[in-house]
Amino acid sequence: MYDLIVIGGGPAGLTATIYAIRKRLNVLLVSKDLGGKTNYHLALPWIEDYQVIRGLEVVNKFKSELEYLKFARVLQSVERVESRPEGFAVLTREGNELLCKAVIVATGTRQKFMSVPGERDYMMRGLCYSALSYAPLFIDRKTIVVGDSDLALRSAAELATVAKHVHLVGATKETLEKPLGKKLKGANNVTILGATRWLKCRGIVMLSA
Image (cartoon, rainbow, N blue to C red; front, top):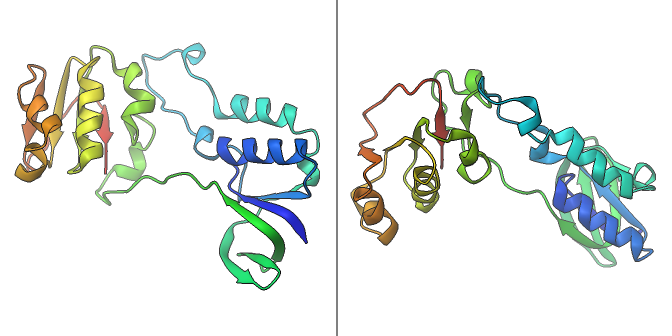
């Protein structure tokens, strides 16, 4: 039985494993890969390679600290976690049952797909799901944010500080009545459109669920 199982191989999971090893815990990291979302980067024709931190570089920096990580990891997908009298059981899709006294879930977040034609084809090729991560790459560009949520408002606001123009598509009247929505309605470089309107913008699309 392990003292601790960390579920998730992104920066949070790797960091948790680092500290567990330093505390001399019998720890196991379980993830389908190492790096999480850092394995993906936005490919844009006007961005040089030196301006982008590759996911592999980030993971390698973590791995350099994790001298024993290769002996304390299982590269499998977690199916579920069950409570047991002595602790927990982490069940993987491959059929393994891993027992531990404690579990850290560091699986991060996942984007919400719109399931529209072309979405998968252009993913990370001008189409991305995080304005916070990629807004600096869109300086003086025309962008689109699709969504009706606080996240969509924040994404549009983030882009409006650097982009030439932002089109916010799909925001409802109720969402726009929020303080940030009112601010966006008054911004000179923000245009708000209903969900039935579509625009072209030099191949740059920002999506926010």
